[in-house]
Every structure is written in structure tokens, then in C-alpha cells.
Length: 330
Image (tube, rainbow, N blue to C red; front, side):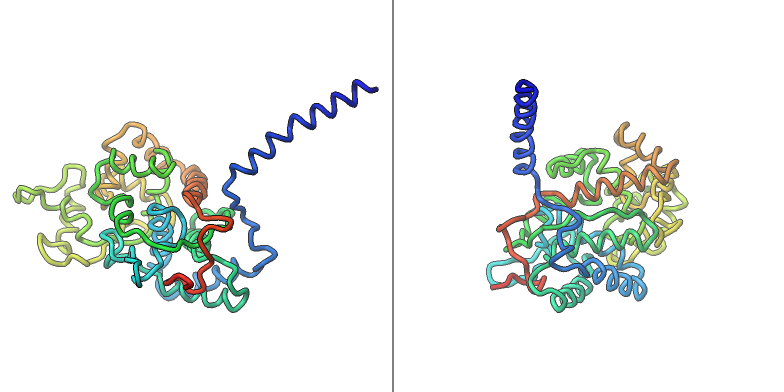
């Protein structure tokens, strides 16, 4: 009997350090974070995102993109939402965001409504993460429990926004390196690129594929020639920089795997899209897998979104809960 008790005590003690360590190492984000402090938070986000989407279907892709552009700079901390003021130079002025980042007014509306419901409780960074999930669901994509508990940054990084966000004309290796620096892998890269199943891109982002640098007018060999000819009608050699083109011409406002099917037909709009098929065998295999199985794409996209949302969040006493998402509290 005594020996049995000793064994039980030893077993229980053996698990104490393990449990303690795991708790200390966690990022402390979990979906139920606001269940007690602001139980209606997610309902408010969902309602306002749905209203914005009904008014402008492009808004779903814009809100999803904001979350990406936030996380890839200083982590998922709401820094992309800050306007320039005092010593802060806004990330909205960076090359990836200037003249293209949008949805800030929707985030403002959500924040205002949540502040009335539960003041100084829900972070702007968490609002972005929830809005990204809701935008995906509204367009027919997968849902997931959004881990919450992020706090908002006290500054922005214009240089980080310029350097860390993957660009349409980056090489495959450059894009993969940018993902790896954030703790994401090649599977995350291909799955998250699938967000280009919705939304638009500007002429200036893919013109180089239509008119090569030597000026002889030949299209990128990885671009279907008939598709390229159609694109040239609205994306001239010069001018029309802001003209918009759907990223997925088959189902432009539906979240599905047609994006990957388009890549297989060499009808990916951006160079950064098509190189997933042409420049790496592992990513090529993933493109083919997701083109064949929508369910596998959805499953991995949800996992990768949770993983991306965990990029160096501010938790505990770090950062703050902004009252207005465009500026720090003081």
C-alpha cells in the first residue's frame, strides 16, 4: 500500500514541471478569451463585416489582406491600422499598402460598436483576426476558432512593411524566406496564397508579365497567351496603374480552389501566384493537390490562418488595448 502511494506521488510530481513549462511557453491566445469580458464581441464583428460585404463584395478580400499585412510586419499587433502621428510613420504609406490597403473604416465601425458594448476590452489586433475569419466564411470558405488575446502595438514599422510583406514580383525563394522568417513553412505559403481566390489586383502589380523589360512585347512564358491578350486591353504598357483585375477570373467573389486550377492552366494573375507551380517541386505538388481537393485546401487554409495569427502577438502587459484603432491611447 505504501509503495503504491509513493508511486502515485512520484507520477503526479513527474507531470508538474511539464505542465508548468508548457504554460510558460504558450502565447496565451485562445478562442474563449472574451467569453466573460465581452461575450458579444464576435457577434458584433460578424454583423458589421456582413453589412460591409453586402455593400461591397470586395471588402471581404480587403479585410483578409489587412490581417496578412498586419501579421507579417511586427507580428499580429494592429500596427497596420495606425495613422501617422507624432513619431509614428504609418505602414499605410508602404509600397504594399499605398493605394491598395482598404477596409480601415470597417474596422473603425467595429471598434466603435465594441467600445460601446465593453469599453477598453477588445484589441484592434483581435478585431482584424476575427474579421479575416468572417470574411473567409462570408465568401464560402472555411471557418475556424480564432485564438484571441492579442494586444495592440504602440508603434508602426514602415520599413518592416516595405521589406517583410511578400511582393508580386518577388522570386519564389524570396517569398519562402519571408514566410520562414515568420515561422511559416512551404505548406503555409501555398495554402495562404489560396486567399487570392477572392479579391483584385492592380495593373501595376503584374504589368511586367505582359510586357517584358526589353520592350519587345512578349508575354511571360508562364502566362497563357490568350489570357495575357485580354489583360493587355485594360493594362497598357504605361498608364492605368490602378485599374483592377480579379485574381480568380472563374469565381472572383467565391472562396474556393479555382485559384489553384487557374495556376495549372497558367492563368494565375500575379507572378507570385504562378511561381508556386513553376519554380518548386514541393509547392507544385501542393498546388495540384489543392486543385483536386477543395476540402484539403480548406482544412489547411484554416490551420495556416491560425498559425499566421500566432506570429509574435503582444500579450499580458505588453502593448495596450487601443480605444481608437488609428492611434495609440496617449
